[in-house]
Each structure stands twice: as structure tokens, then as C-alpha cells.
Length: 103
Image 1: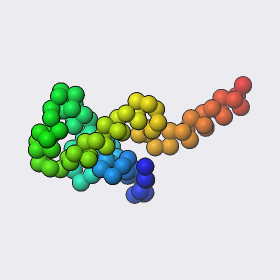
Image 2 (image 1 turned 180 degrees about the horizontal axis):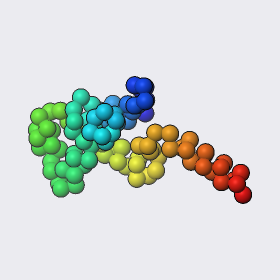
Image 3 (image 1 turned 120 degrees about the horizontal axis):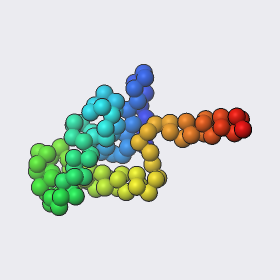
């Protein structure tokens, strides 16, 4: 996961095909170079839409490897291996040390 600094807003590349940018779709994960949100494609998969049809429906802006990456990302999120909230670990440490100091 790479972060690119744009002043206050940070663009986070979650992989080769997926990005989170506060300036695009209110910071929802999208496929690079588009405004197609990852959750839209995941819903299509959940409904049993064949991947070839998903690629066709988005006019090739979402490729087979991008679909694979979206599923891998979803799997990692459920396993708790990654967080889409930047600096979440830093905030947890801050509050943990603050609670210990107050005790």
C-alpha cells in the first residue's frame, strides 16, 4: 500500500488496480483511472454475474486482474490484515497510552 501526499488529502494505492483518493467518490475505493467503486463490482460478483460480463458492462475499465485484486482486498479486510483508514494504528496507540496515563 502506497500513500501519495497531496497536501492534506492523501491518495492511497491499495494495489495495482485499486486506489482510495478523498477527491474521488468521497474516498471510497475505486479502480484506478475511473469512478467505478470496488463495492459495485463486488456486488456484481455476489449476484453471480460472470466476470466476462462484468468486464463488458464496465467497457473494459475493470479488467479480470482488477476483479481478482478486489476480491483479494476484500478477503484481507475481513481477515483484519489491512485497514482502509489511514493512520488508524497511530490513533489506537495514542488513545491506549492516554488511557494508561490517566489510570
